[in-house]
Length: 119
Image (cartoon, rainbow, N blue to C red; front, top):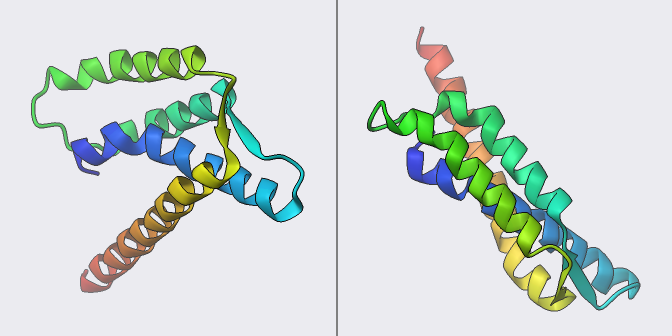
């Protein structure tokens, strides 16, 4: 995984989840706003931590800063927790991010499948 993609991963994951929450709220008419939950931010940080071993770090010393970055993102998620965002805005931002993540996953899967076939 590229270093820049990894830096954005916690935010992209959280945006995708908030997009799904916003879509569910709009479809069911259950709520009109989506709270920015620290739990979702924490899940994004957990996903980034889980894949951090596969990141191609440009500099060796940056590898140790990954925990500082993840801690800062988690702290930001706690600070903005309980901020209400309109469900439509969460959907408009989150669904394209979700589609982009799924597309990226399919591309990575296809590339690894082709690489495995070459051996």
